[in-house]
Image 1 (cartoon, one colour):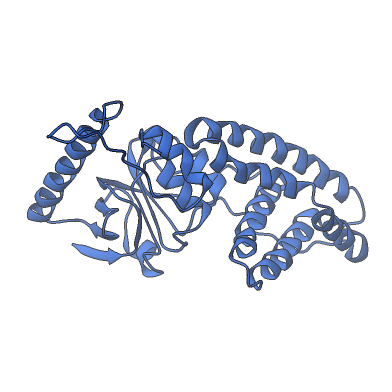
Image 2 (cartoon, one colour):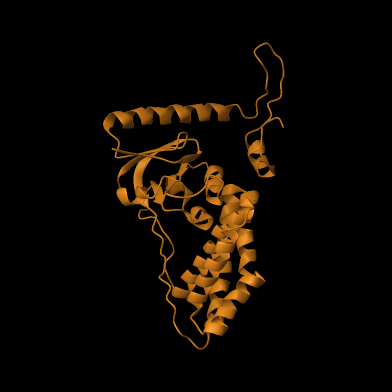
Amino acid sequence: MKKYLGKGVYGAIAIGKISVFKKCDAAVTRIHVENKEKQRVKAAKELAAKQLTEIHEKALREVGETHAQIFEIHLMMLDDDDYNESIENIIDTQSVNAEYAVALTSDNFAEMFSSMDDAYMQARAADVRDISNRIIANLTGANTNSAATDEKSVICADDLAPSETVSLDKDKVLAFVTAHGSSNSHTAILARNMNIPAVIGVGDSFLSEIHEGETVIVDGFTGEIIVAPDELTLKTYTEKQKRDEEQKKLLQELKGKENVTIDGTKINVFANISGIDNIGAVLLNDAGG
């Protein structure tokens, strides 16, 4: 039995088999090329736009308009003048292959965003890498990222880009666990809004020490991960999971009912939110205001 500790981003218990998320990252090498590279970039971007449009539509259905906006930003970044001029200039001045030009532009822009003081702009580093990796995958014909199983499982990864999170079949995901990541990342926010238990920032050693198909417990309340639990631990967490599910079911049954105390006094139960992107959850859970 091995234990790890990260940051829980959605409070729930998940128990299941590990499925390691495999990123199909194509190795990018610098190759001297004389022509047609700009046309290749254009075709790869057109395909990326089509893919992102499909992901945006899926996100609208699963997490709502506010959180699906990240993919609108990705679509806009595909057409960003500075981004595209950088790719074209590298191709023109260095006579290199499209994959290398996109990868170098991605590194430069991500480094620029990461060095900014504003947290919102720092988050754009992950976005530019996400769209760049998509373009490179289209250029190389790499397979899409995937989990190793079609069964319900706990998805374990180094990190997950927003598009990777939404692209997974929600019905087959018991929980997300990542070695890296921030609780304020788009991926963490998406996991919360998909109501999927998630723990992030478990550490570098995590992926190297787990195995495909191992039983794992994910505690989204405490951020604790238990791999290959013993019988007593498994029983304890199964009972905790059952209690949590029963409590959530009881809370759901209160939706739509009047807020009245035992002595007949009507009261308002309001939601405390941090921004307008939480309003959807307020309405969904029948808060008084």
